[in-house]
Length: 212
Image 1 (cartoon, rainbow, N blue to C red):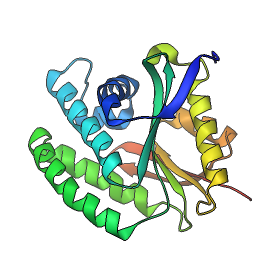
Image 2 (tube, helix red, strand yellow):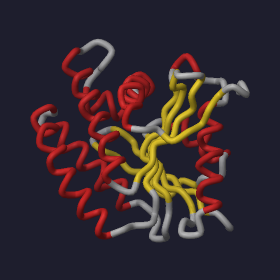
Image 3 (spheres, one colour):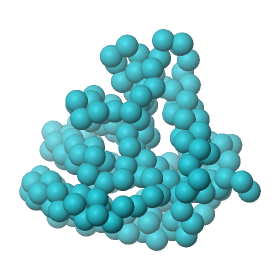
């Protein structure tokens, strides 16, 4: 990677860049295609993806989550959203109340089928999560033009450094719907915890445990 690249935590002003990047990075993702439709060809699907990613970004500031990204000057090249293991009940209650206000418009922006599938995904993947304290990698994406340049690897290295420095965290859990990603994560030290399905879409639940 270029030494001029900058890795930093995203702020609320980075929301448009985050939504644009993740929309493109996940446009051919099997689960996104199944839930939202083809956002590259269908205007309604594109609006649904935008609404969902906007909600996801807003949610990260209401709960115990962080969004990190790699920039080339002012251009966002890659980003990830991670949920940390430490919980603060008071802040979670406050975040939950604020989230209700953000959920109401989302209900009108997404179809009932889409909402059911998203809820099923959360329920199934979280049930496969390890019982020990861990970071949960919600999403990681790289701008198509920046793929193959070490952006994703650098983001993962940053996450590994984060959990090594966090005494409350014993590792990372993540989920992917792409079979080819399983081997890539295994090379990074992840193991396949569980393989399941949502409709006909395979879901691979993986974990990385430190100090093994």
